Amino acid sequence: MITVLLVDDEPGLTEITKRFLERSGKCQVAIAGSAADAIKMLKNAEYDVVVSDYLMPDMDGITFLKTVRSGNTTVPFIVFTGKGREEVVIEALNNGADFYLQKGGDPAAQFTELQSMIWKGVEQRRAQRELYEKNHILDAILAASPHGIALVKNKRISWVNDAFARMLQYSKHDLIEKDIESLYENHEVFRRVEDQIATDLENKMHSELRTRFRQESGPLIDCEINIVPLEEHNKESGTMITVTNITKRLAMAREIERLSAFPYLESNPVIELNKKGQISYFNEAAIDDLIKLGPGATLEVFIPQDLPDLLRAMEHDDTSHYDRTVQIGKVTYREHITVSPRFHVIRISATNATEQKKIQAAMREMEDALRNQQG
Image 1 (cartoon, rainbow, N blue to C red):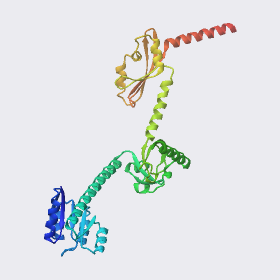
Image 2: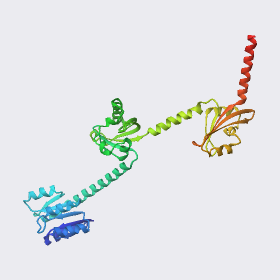
Image 3: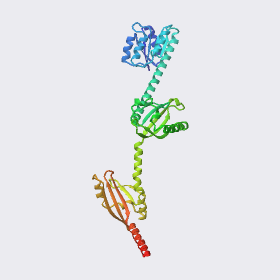
Image 4: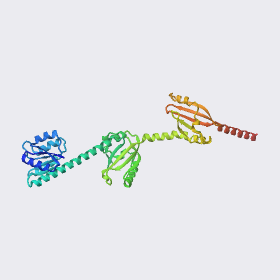
């Protein structure tokens, strides 16, 4: 049901208009005999459309229109005018009227045209409201995103969200109209990235790559950027860029790789336990020795019997070191154990003492043999 506020000081005309519009079953018409009464009615209720006469004794239709629009309302507004009032039509449209209708002529044709204007006005108003709501929701999503988002047109930044500004340590105001190249490491990097983006957009309509952006204070940060055109096949509309700061992630990955390489590359078995005494890491050498120990052997055989004491040592603040001897079948292992409360880890580095004794014995035999030959 469409609610119509009909404003006119001619009772006979308003009643006829009301009957015609309500005959469709789609309209409900409220009548105001003056602009002053209409203003009061608009304060107390919402209407889908306003239809107003121009010539009224207390306030004309244009003044009434200006008053309505001054309240920031976008309700569709249709102005009734008499014939020969082209200047009124122009003024009405300039002040926000959606349609105008000249009085006179065939009443049936006039009312049919008025009804059509009402339908169009309401449909346009609903479409505008839906578009506004969608844009409002989209703005909220973009603003709340933890990723930096920017709209770039003609190589200049047109819009950014808060996360983008925080990431680069700029104010949002200072980023608007900023040349996007100024954020890159140097001109060569910018040109290389620009060429890659252009190729990707041409072939698959999106681009994903890694680069570096410069913060306002100077430092460079590693970034993953995703680029899509705002409108397909329309370069003038610009591109949306989503930026994720991966500096910390890359630094952590490099450190993990560097630190984990030591036990991995070590030729002796290395096993690490967490604060619950569970195995959290082992290297390839541990598996090689485990295979030599025979079927059914597990990595737990390297764990010394006083594990509860080692776990209690993790409750202290300082790193501590211990040496243990572990007998596994016929093989003796010398183990150097580091308890690190800071990292909640117990690291066991095992040396095959039995094998080492054999090597040492073989070395002594070779030395003895060499001395005998020289003697």
